[in-house]
Image (tube, rainbow, N blue to C red; front, side, top):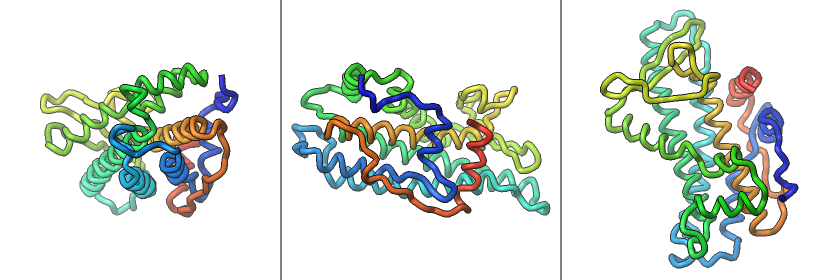
Length: 263
C-alpha cells in the first residue's frame, strides 16, 4: 500500500483544495505530467495521447471550472425583492441548463486527460488500468470510483436528452431565493436520481447542494488522477507545480458557504 493515499475526510480535502479567494489549479500539473511522461505519443502507444489534444483538454477544464463557479454564484444568489417569480423561474431554468452542460463538458475533457494517462499497449481499457493501480497502491473502492468518473455515462445521457429536447428541466421556487429542480422524460418520469441529502422528500433536487457536490466531485477526480499520474511517472506524490487560482471572494463566497452547509 502506498502511504501517499491516506484517507481524509471530505472536509479536510475541501480545506486543502479551496481558499476564501480561489482554488487549487490542478489541470496544469496533470497536463505537464502527461506531456513529460516519456510516453511515445503515437497511435500504437495510446490512441488518445496527442499532445495537442492533452493541451486543449487541460485548457478547457481550467476555463470551464472557472465558468462553473460563476454560474454557481448566480444560481445561489438571493434575487431582488422586486424580482417576479416568472422571471426567477425563467432565469434559473437557463442557468441550470447552462450549469449542467458546463459540467458535462468539464467531465468530458477530464475523460480525455484520463484516457491519455492509459497506455493502451498494456491495458485494454480505463477500467483495467485503474484496477491494476487500485491493487498496486491499496486505494479504496470509493476513491477509485472518483478516478473512474462513475457519473460520466449518465451525465452524457442527460446532456444529449436535454440538447435533443427528449427531456425537460423544471425549476421550482422554494421561497427566500432557494431553488430546486428536476429533469423529466417525455412520460413525465424523474430522470435525475441523487443522494437523499441532495433532494427533498418529494424527489426534487436541491440546486445548491447538488451543484456544490458536482463541482467538488470534479476537483476530487482531478486531485486523485494527478496524484496517480505523478506516482506512476515519478514514484512519489509532491505538492510541487500546483498553484492557487485566485478568482476573488465574489466567485468563491457562495461556494464556500455551501461547503459549510453540506460538509
